[in-house]
Image (cartoon, rainbow, N blue to C red; front, side, top):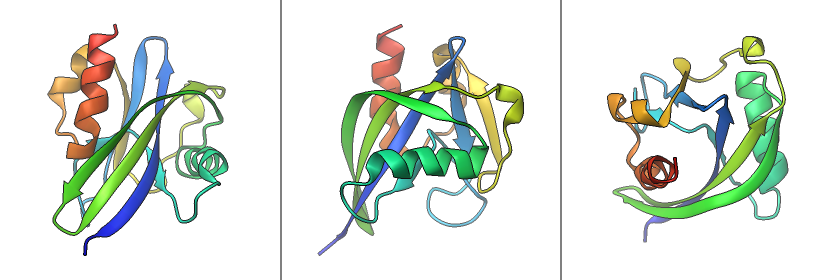
Length: 132
């Protein structure tokens, strides 16, 4: 039986651009781009987990606005459920400090196709591109 992994991801928009991050050079989905998020270890702490993860890994404070979509991705090693949440940036973009990702960029929805994305994020990318 495949392992089940639950993730919560932040869709952080600032001045019509979205925060995207490039995953590390090793591990699953290496070098691919994603919306930042956190693996949920136990149900019920999703909000605080996402707030803490974005603070720890990017030095940003955010406010969670609304859930956009939950997707399921079947990877050979696991079934990955990702809940994407629209977020508001409360910090200055100049405060960004990277801890785990190689790079992070602010890009418009029209630029999404220029990046090699993790497969689980593709559905939310289409939703964002179609709601401009």
